[in-house]
Image: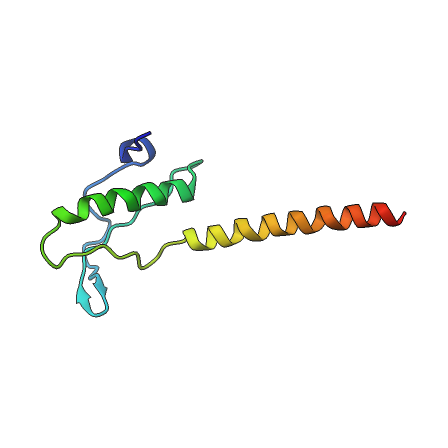
Length: 101
């Protein structure tokens, strides 16, 4: 299914503060902040946004590329992995304790 930004986000043109200068590795850049909507899935949203930007990138001006200087999804993936690992460890320990008694 297609995820439209208007379905998961409020989009505004403008800024709270126009005194900000964006740079990546010392070169001028344009910044875009995407905040997760309440109740939205961070991993699905990030995947959909990255796929859409990859689709749009051929239309960007020559030399312009997309970079993700602050992406929290790797931390979310690690946290999910650790929770699942801890759950399996707890299940194994419960079975061991029940088997001993």
